[in-house]
Structures are given as C-alpha cells and as structure tokens.
Length: 329
Picture (cartoon, rainbow, N blue to C red):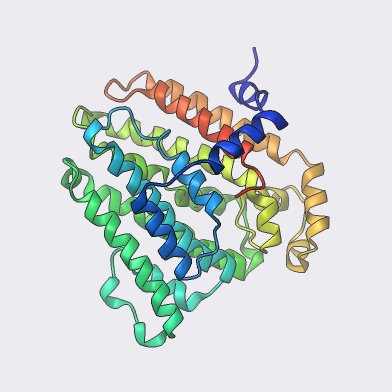
C-alpha cells in the first residue's frame, strides 16, 4: 500500500499544477482584506498579489470543524492578518537582516510602549506603525471570541515562540556558522503559526473538552511541523536567491555534508542548488511528514471533541497546495 504522501504527490503533474495556480490567480480577496494588502504595499511590502491570494484561498482549509459558524469568517480574517504580521517581521529578519527595525517589531505584541520611534527614520516609522495596526486588529478580533480568556495565556506563550523563531532567523542569516538541524527543528516550525491559528480556533469551539488539551496540543505541534516541511521543500530555491538560509533543507544538507558553510557564505547559488537537488533531502523530509501524519492518527483515537480526520484531510490539502504553487510564492 502506498504511503499517504506518495498518493498526494502522485496527483501532481503539469496539468494539476497549472489548474491550481490558475485557481489561485482567480481568487478575489474580501474588500477589507484587499485594503490591508493595499496598505501593505504603501509601506513597500515585497510579497506580490499571488502570495496574498494563496494565503486567503487556502486559509479556510485548516479551520477546525468545531469552530462555530458565526465565527468562521472572522477566523479566516485573523489567519490572514497573522500571516501578514509574520511576513512583515520575517522579511526584516530574513531578507533585509535589519536588526534595528527587527528589535522594535518584536516588541509589538507585548511591549509596544517600549518601541523606540526616535531611533527610526520616517520610512521605518511608517513600517513599524503599520505592523502595530495589523497586530491591533488581530487582538481586537481575538478578544471577542467566547473562550478567549480561557486560552489567552497559552496563546500568548505560542506567539512568543513565533517571535523567537523570527529572531533566530535573523541570527542564522547573520552568522551562517549557527546553522544546525537541532535548533532548526526546535524553533523554525513556530513561524508557520499553525499552533497559534488552531488555538484561536479553540476559542471559538464551545464543545471542545479542555480535558483533551494536552493531546490536541500534540496534534497541533505535529501539524505545524508538517506545514513547515511543505513550506521548506517548496521554497528553498527562491530563498537561495534571496540569500536566506533559514530552510531546514540547508541545515540537513550541512549535517550530512552535502554542502558546507563555505558554500553558503560564498553564495554560489547555482552550485548550491545542484548539490541539494542531487541529494535525497526532500525525500527524507517527506518521510518525516508521513511519520507525523501517522502520529496524529494514533493520538486522534483519544480525542473525541475535535474531528482529527478533518485535520488530516486539511494537511493533505495543504501540502498539495504547497507543491502545486512551487516557484510562485
């Protein structure tokens, strides 16, 4: 019997890829989200329209079926805005490697009053103020959910892990000798925001039994790792062009001596891509994806108030979406 990941990837061919890409291009953002994208462009945000259409087009698939119908639209909106927040901070860490702005951006969720605007130029101030606006909107939506107070502290903890991941990304790109698979596995899944998203879903899930929290958290963490794998193996080539080496593909390649730090530092892009493509790195990550899929299935047998099969189906759709948009985002 074929592994689940083999079944999914077996559906991907030039025809399905073209169809999925065209489907994303036809996505129309709701007016309020399109306005956010326009504001994003005004602060010189660098991601193109395809990325935002992809984010919105795929934002519904991971919403827990337990979320009450009346909250689903706003949950989709909050997911979109969290992605925008992560992109705004992540691009400063990964692409621009600007520690001055990054330090201020990392204060936005919990230490906004400590932001040193006097150390920023006018362009930087506009950028930081927009990030504050995005985050304030996220908070305002989230506070209205029925189980907000119950899970608030846990979600704040999860957000701090997300911020840690982005700070670590800056450090790795500043000092390539820091790249290692252990820390990549600890930190870098968090800025996929899956745990944050799904915990927010629980705030809108009135029938969720809190006694199942420890088990569902395991599911969320495995799901987050699976999402990270899908992202890593479909974006690493673009990241080489940007001299962003935060993909686990690079950490794995260094660990197994497929590449060396000197290759990264010299940024011989063509040579790096050739070496990695000749290896079995992607296959190893896909085996891990399959392993985590099976773990979720096993854990799910003990969870009654969340439909685990729906989460698994969503993860299948998500990795399919990653592969069919490879090279576009």
